[in-house]
Image (cartoon, rainbow, N blue to C red; front, side, top):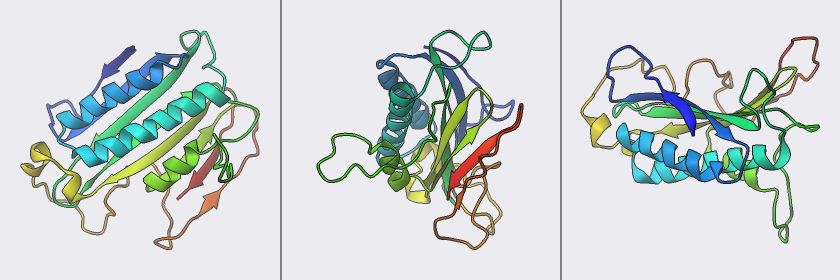
Amino acid sequence: MAGDHTPFDTGDDPSKVERHVTLPYVPTSVMDARRRLSDDLRAVGVAEGRIDEAVLIISELVSNALRHASPLPTPANPANSVGVAWRAEVDAAPGGWLEISVRDGGSTTMPRVADPGASGLGGRGLGIVQHLAGRWGTEMDATTTTVWAVLDLPPEAAGPAAQGEGAASDPAAPAGRPPGRARDPRGGGPVVSLPFTLHDGGRARGALL
């Protein structure tokens, strides 16, 4: 597995982690991503129950990319690859958040939650992500699609490494929401935003909050 491990700031902050990796476009990359993510989350003190949910989310996102999308375009990316990234901030007081994203070469259809029916054998991947994640959505440009999900890390999900921090935060800021993601201004309920008109070099966004 290629990639690097880069903390949010220049110091050694035990409550933050950020990683970007490039995986081969093969099924074994699902297990590689699960292992690296779980190692990082244990290192910053995330509780095992939340780690189980996080590795299930990344498994579904990577599996969907391998099953339904094309590899990342070359030559900007390695041949036959998919991009995976995560960033987390753990705080024992207000709670924290984990954002997972998977980038691929796109497909002919928009990633969506399917309804395979009670007897269906597949099609449940994004439904599982929607059930576990506080928010998820998609970002598209002319050559790539990124599907992202945000998992809340409430105070009880912070392990010993995070509980010693005790950092203060803005009480008005909702826990579990990383910077740069939209939120529902009404404070709750499902909101879908799907502006899919693409121009040369433009981007399309879809979000389920």
